[in-house]
Image (cartoon, rainbow, N blue to C red; front, top):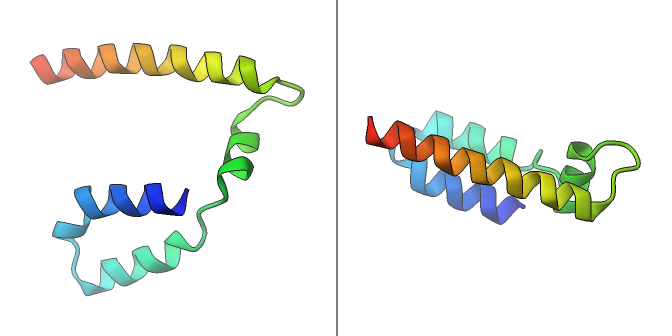
Length: 73
């Protein structure tokens, strides 16, 4: 999870951050939870991982459609 967040930061925000923001980011990066902890926080109590995956896939499908619409504007 830390690697994914780091890669996202490097390609999006890092070019516009000075040393203060970059240092604050490094501190905040230590607060990123492990992947399993993050997934458990997103899931409903008692929800199966398969159901959660289906819900995420449906969300991503609708998100891609929305982003394509926004990009065309």
